Image 1 (cartoon, one colour):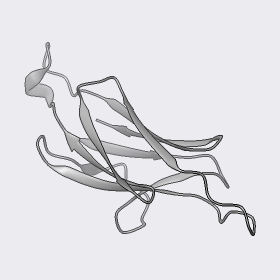
Image 2 (spheres, rainbow, N blue to C red; image 1 turned 90 degrees about the horizontal axis):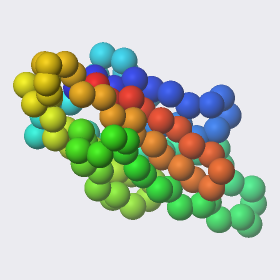
Image 3 (cartoon, rainbow, N blue to C red; image 1 turned 135 degrees about the horizontal axis):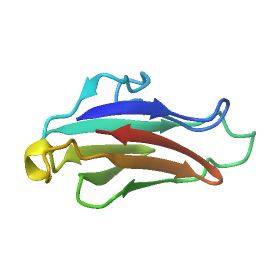
Length: 107
């Protein structure tokens, strides 16, 4: 599976477990996991950061486990051998914190 990074400038961003943007040529093999994190600009003084909510569409392509602290583990459930006619399945993994969201397309 390949992941493509997407975020609005100055807003929330989805990065890998080491804090790097998810590369367009990143590969996630069926049955393997990738740790993602939602990075947001620092909140205003005295204002707590909103919690991060993770979701994936369509269902059944990847599984998401919320690890807390804005991090999630994404596991590939399908590959092109599971699809008819053999094509790579695509899922949009979205992280939202308050009104700000960022999406990673995993192929």
